[in-house]
Length: 280
Image (cartoon, rainbow, N blue to C red; front, side, top):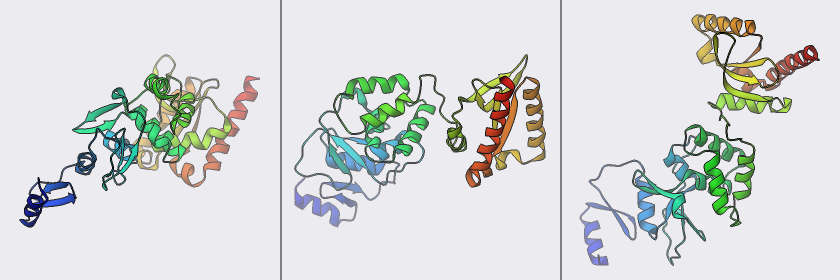
């Protein structure tokens, strides 16, 4: 449309101006992701959403669309003002898709871009959450590293390190509380598996953390879900069954993990020393 036609539409009050090139019907209801749509339309040229906005669009917890990042291989003299645009040397088709009408990079490439923009610990949490929700896997990350690992792009090194710490049978933390527990206990250098089915002749239940080499079970008790009388009775019965199966059970609370982590860590460490002395 000519500038006169655009001005006429604006003056009638039926269209809102989003950018010098983009109009939005004033009568249209707001929809989820419309800012992503608008940024892609305004930039054009095969751009795709990435970074934190892509993480939000994929449903990875802890992200929002406040900061929109677009990646594109196309050079344009005028960039959109609706997003941060990064021109990249290549954007292979296999690592770009359309999700609910939005052109977006796949989660593996999204992580590469996150590696170059946010703290490594936050990238690790995003990786765990995406892995837990089935958005990616160890082999899919390996495929990306095989495709793009020699390109020297920012973030590849960190993603390779994060992948190296997670074997193919890796089980991501089920919750922030579980992740907090593994961080608190990390200095003890235990070989802990998460969410493990345990029991002898009969199934005792799925425990939060279990050591691979010692008969040690660590249960994380949330005040919200384990303070009621019935919850305490069920927990006691489960603990008795695990002890009959030969495990030593150490319980730590969410309050300890957040306010007194050294108390929880010292209690686990004392149990570990006792088990190792018994084994020797």
